[in-house]
Image (cartoon, rainbow, N blue to C red):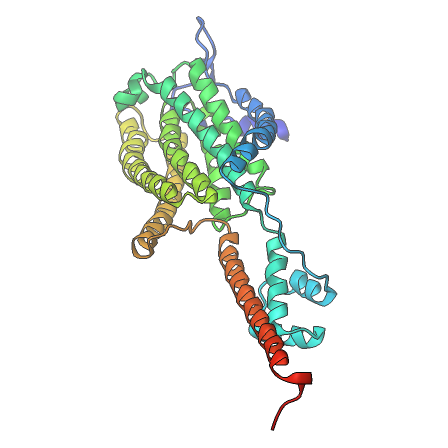
Length: 386
């Protein structure tokens, strides 16, 4: 059964243009062509990247974070309460005012104490700024390296400057060593992101990120097997170039360098909107959707490739909406807050407000105590006159 499925899956009519056989893509005369078996190496390389990431975050990102003044946060411990803990785990992490009132009566606490308990309990499970900085530092470093490598690999390739060259001789286009390592490194990175989703910070666009990583791996794997390497390298470089600026902006945001963060964010927004709303649809999609029709009749892998690229463009439109939303907010509020960031940010604001309230309450208590102490000195033996 497995052999039957394998033979059906690799039918030439699914992957290659009519009249082209897999035998036409066998290595010959020193020329090497893509093989699906090459992709097996992306899994072990992904785990190698995870190991490298661990040591990078420990020995490079952490000291760098401390240089920027980011320290491990010590959060206030909560007083264990089985009733509140059970409600937190099995009902909701954000109780309504009615729930708070009922829990306060049940636990013999004030409503303020119940609210504070839930807020601190939620913050226990949230990553600190150090972890967020480490993640962004790792991604920034990888995107920087892979973008520089991509530019070095592609700057002298004719299909970068003449899109007709992308399809010249397709699919009998030999694989270059630079293309091999560019693809394998990029795919391994996205596999490593998928493998580490459980331990990474969960952001509001978690589902979109999962779809994006799966789409990226699927698209690169499919384009590799069908030998769409030239167009694939163009897609990768166009998408990587903006991510450098986003991760660097987030790093400076966590470090508290707001002006630098804002500047980098505006650069990122410009690069993102140009690369993904102009270059990608009007350059890359034009290259993959329109130009092949001058050489070939539409076939299955041509259709499937473009469907995947369109899914990618839908994600680009979604993220563009979020970016424009942030830009709008920054224009009217003079501050940039990442609307796709993890939900901890809003609770950090609430925690700051809570600290201010506690400080005000403490000052009020001290003032009352001082006032009572002063009155005791004014009235001998604490007796009041008539």
